[in-house]
Amino acid sequence: MANTYDVLFIGSGPGGYVGAIRAAQLGLKVGVIERQYVGGICPNWGCIPAKALLRSAEIFHYIEHAKDYGLVAEKFGVDIAGVVKRSRGIAAQMSNGVGFLLKKNKVDVIWGQATLTAPGKVTVAPSAEPAPKGALAAGEYTAKNIVIATGARPRALPGIEPDKKLIWTYFEALAPASVPKSLLIMGSGAIGVEFASFYKAMGSDVTIVELLPQILPVEDEEIAEHARKRFEKQGIKILTGAKVSKVVKGADSVTATVETADGKSQTITADRLISAVGVVGNIENLGLEALGVKTDRGCVVVDGLCRTNIPGLWAIGDVAGPPMLAHKAEHEGVIAAEAIAGKHAHPMDKLMIPGCTYCMPQIASVGLTEKRAKEAGFEIKVGRFPFIGNGKAVALGESEGMVKTIFDAKTGRLLGAHLVGAEVTEMIQGFVLAMNLETTEEELINAVFPHPTVSETMHESVLAAFGRAIHM
Image (cartoon, rainbow, N blue to C red; front, side, top):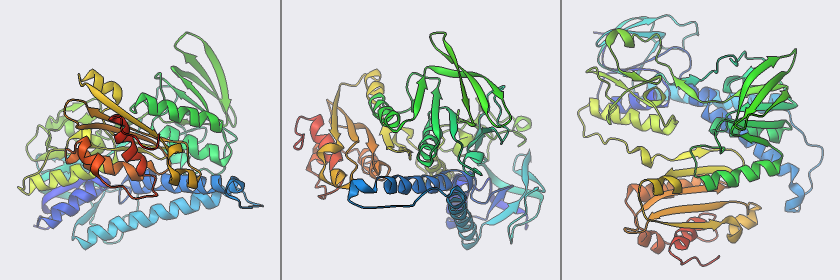
């Protein structure tokens, strides 16, 4: 029957479209239900357009410091409309690319709002958003397997709900009509510090308020402290162990009351406030309650193969819980597709999932932090190597940074790697591969790294953990 599938994915984000393509490759009849953006948040309003903005900020930063490279640059400035136009153009290109890939792999796109009405049955209501060319219309659809891939949305704090004008989420922050002279950011996770970097480079006076004692709470303490010093050196003001308890809106500004752990408070007035206090899974209005689907803290509960407690119902990506990262969603899409197809799917080891933050400086990590390794009872060896000891980094004018590696002292197994500095988001995958291959320190030490490259800092960090660093 035309409306019957082997598998339906609800959501076309990184998890949904990748899982759908993999399922189609395995010979299944596949459909993807989408209500708003082909490709989901990541290419449209998340990862990709944000990186486009940050690239513009990075280039502007280099132009501002042209003299440091023996160059002369005059009469330059920020055209925020042009910056946003470039970002939105790239987002459209990526979204169109996802649509092309789905069509190429013969995956049907069904346009509308999905509701689970019974096991294996979905009712799709019309969407307010215009359907892309070739999409199937709303109606009743059935599938042997249904994969929930509905993603997440910005978390809103009571009393500080975003209004799209004075209080922004990442949606508004990605497409500003103008650069605010002053900006207050609640939250210092990846979203918060990336926007702090962008708007500081664009000329805003930026203040970050973080509830926890350190910024970038999921990162290694030493790396987070290094990043904090770099941010503060750029002029970004940071308040940790503090929270925004109240916000009063003015005609074109907000005044926030910020309370610290010691009971003190202060008021901060800024043109705009960005709420970057995390995201919450999109589990509402899907019919999960009626089917008895188990959820926990706003996310669908799944096992290692992304199965829910209801046979034939799966969940992947942000809606299936942390870490809420696009690449995690993609791999879960593949895991679910292969499990549905009866292949030998491999459960994901979440400890092997790298995290990347594209602020200035960049931050990347995988595995255990030093603190978590100690808490887990490991006897560890820790290696550190600064970028100042690397010729390529110095030649690039990027000598501020470091690589930190953590090993099990008894077995030599790499437990974690943490990097801060230029282009470290492109370097972390070397350590990810090493951990997946259960590489020991001996194998990493014997590996030949090309010279001159910034990646040599990775090798030196391993050497340093075992008392063998050459350039330090």
